[in-house]
Image (cartoon, rainbow, N blue to C red; front, side):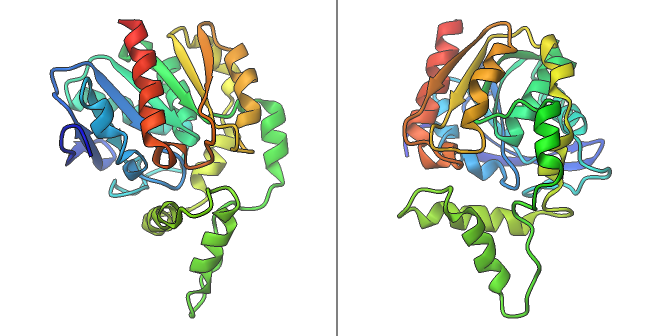
Length: 269
């Protein structure tokens, strides 16, 4: 893999230890990556070195996921955005470009709305627009990833099968990465999905004035239908499609993902 080595560390924050991975020189402009539920920083394992060639690329484990401390409160998008801002401050980063995928994109919107002075631009990848209609549609939906544990391990296969149709054929390593991350979640496996489903984005998105790139994965049935509506509610946004993209876009197509991010950031310079 081309690019700088990935370094991993923990930051001591108000919620406990928060784990992050980074690549590139700390003196370079910073890019913060936020993952989907129930993944971890590893969703960006192949992206960090590519972006790290020109930027200081940092991917954090959201509180309760990966190696970060369990959440001391019921998960909310607002809480997670606050911790992300705290991590930036602990690393001495005054302002960062923020890239979020699925849940991470929703957190990125709140981060830009609540802490605009710390966010230079946004890349919202496969990010839903969570308004009243979205909340109503999700109110009676079945759990996405939670399964009942069984003594013979059949629940592990069920986790795999629940996601299999939304992942590319012939890429079992992507599903393996998902299952590994899901097993590391401390607390409610569905907490992230519920936090997204309850977030009142329509009341917050008007505060987002930074330039925005909306990345659409056309073969992601959950998120791709939201791209146009999301962009329409933003003051300065454009949509870019990554053909063949599905739910695991960043680690499915890391070269195309990193290229889209870098092209957007370079246009801002």
